[in-house]
Image 1 (cartoon, rainbow, N blue to C red):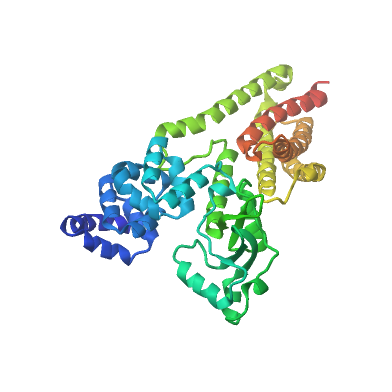
Image 2 (cartoon, rainbow, N blue to C red):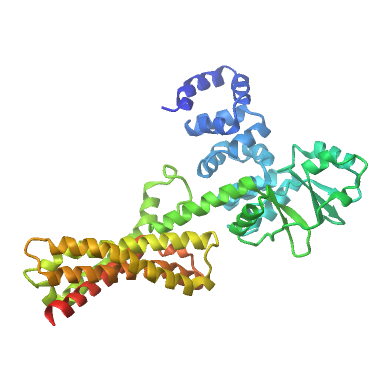
Length: 450
C-alpha cells in the first residue's frame, strides 16, 4: 500500500477540522508528492484538497495530475472554482488541459481567466497536436539589447517567478524580434556596466511553432540546450520549448512507437486510466487484421498438399521451427530500423545500404540457425538426410527474407509518409509466416518430390 493511501484518512479528518492544517502539510511536500496523494483519493476528497490550497500552489499540484484525472476534477470543481487554479497554471500546461476539455467547458473557463492569459491560451490551443507550438511556453525572460548587465540582472530577479526558465535571457529589439541570447552564467560573470548587446550570442538555434515536436527534441539533444526559442517567420519570439517539455515529448513518442510496434493503437491515458472498452477498441482492429493475415497460412499449406503428406506429414514437424525463425528475425530488424529512423540514424537515402546490409545479415544469421536446424533434423529418428537438407536451406532463405522484410517495411512506410512504427512486429511476423511456409514447401517440393 502506498504511503499516500495511509495518509488519506488523516487528511480527510484534518480537512473537516481545519483546511489550513492540510495547507500547511502540503506546503512542505513536493508538488508531485501532493499530486500522488490527490490521485489516490476519491474525486470529492481530491476536490476538497485542491480547494484547501492557495490557487498558485494548487496550480503547481494540478499540473502534476494525470490529464484524464484533471478533466474529471474540472467537472467536480465547476468552472467558477476551477478558473483561479487554471489561471495560475503554466501556459503550456494550461493549453494542454483546455484542449482536452469539452469546448463549452473550455470556453467558460477562458471567459473567467485574466484577459492576457485567455488570449495566450487561445493562441497556444490553435496549434495542432504534436507541433512545437502546442508544447511551448510563452513565459520568457526578454531584455532590450541596449540594457546593461546590472539592469538585465535586476530584470531577471523581478521576472524569475513568472518565467519558464532563467537559464537563458533572450535579447530582443522592436516588437520582440529575437536578436541574441545570453546565459545566466555569462550574466553573473560580466561587469555590471557592460551592454548586453555586446555580450549576447547572435548564432541562435531556433524553431518554428508548426515544426514537429520531435524536431525540437532532436535539436535540444544535439546541441545540449536547456531551452529552445520558438520564433515565427519574421523572427519574432513566441515562446520557448524547455528540456522538461522535451522529456515529456520523448516519453510520449516512445510510448506511441512501442504501442504501434506491438500492434496497439496508442493510448491517451495510463493503463489504469484507460477504461475496458477503450482497450478493446485500441487492440481489436490490429488483432483482426493479423488474424485475417494468418488465415492465409492455411491457404499456403493447402497449395502444397502433396508435399505436406510426404512421409506421413514429417515436414510439418519442422514447420513451427521454420516460421518462428523468420518471424523472430523480421521482428528484430523491424525494431532496429524503426528506432534508427526515429533517432535519425537512418534516413530514406540509406535504403540501398540497409537492404545490402540486411541481406548479408540474414545470410549470416540464417547459416548459424541452419547449422543447428540441419543437425537437429538429421539426427531426428526416422528423418532422411534430404529432409534435413530442406530444413537447412529453408532456414537460410526464411531468415534472410525475414530480416529484409523487417528492415525495408519501415523504410517503405516512411517514404509513403506514414509512421514506420505502423509496420508492427506482429504484422511483419505474420507476413513472414506466410512467406516462410511458401518457401519451405517450395524447397521441399523441389528437393524431395521433383
